[in-house]
Length: 337
Figure (cartoon, rainbow, N blue to C red):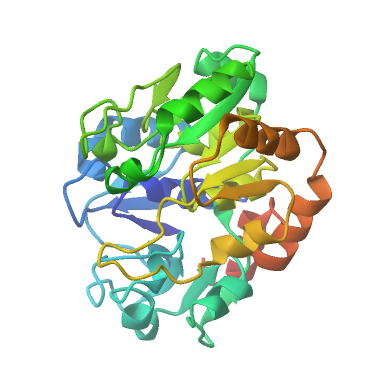
């Protein structure tokens, strides 16, 4: 069983399949390449890859010399350059598949494309007889809250996880007011950002402090964002697809609509994320910066009740039922391995 790794973030999807394969006595090989030299370039993290290889027993290779079942990421991988004798399966990620260079460019070159749900494929008009709707291996991870808190030195206080927006959108948000409101309600504020979008720097004339705790990509697997969501009492989102992870992990969300327009000034089209939000009480969106009382009321609304039934409904209608997808995927491809 083979995996083409062009970005470290793809480990979120690959590792659960490798672990499930190990249970079945299936040996895995990860071929690492890169399409751009950024913070997630595998060549910048060879030590971490080597550690994962030893811990989980998979081979690492820079050359394509495999046969059989091969899992590929969305994006600019070497289309047309993989051996013809491989059975090629794309694991779609976030909304990457709906970019012009992706789904419609590669669907004719692969054998199958895996989506988390039929709803998402249809919403973006990415439909083919090659599609399979088997859920997402990304969520086949068990999270031990006490161990995660120990790992990142997080105390037992209430936790609000702030998903830092892209620098171009930070001026749309009164971040000081958000932080002060959360502190007045007794929350520890954890900021999660990307290495390329460091929040502790001047961007767009805004200096965003790192608050109580600040993380980037300290762990590729289990991925740190999923770990932090699992220990958070509430996530403060900024139009990020992180809402999908929150729904999968039963974590309430307050969202700030910072991406009102695209860079060119056009109104952004409705995404699948709005379906995960509009119907449910575990979520509240602010189009404009709220007052402290409005924000506090929203926090109370999404955190004071058990919305497990609503989370389950959202997963059933728009995503997948959750754990066990890796086993389902390998069952489906058992004759290709």
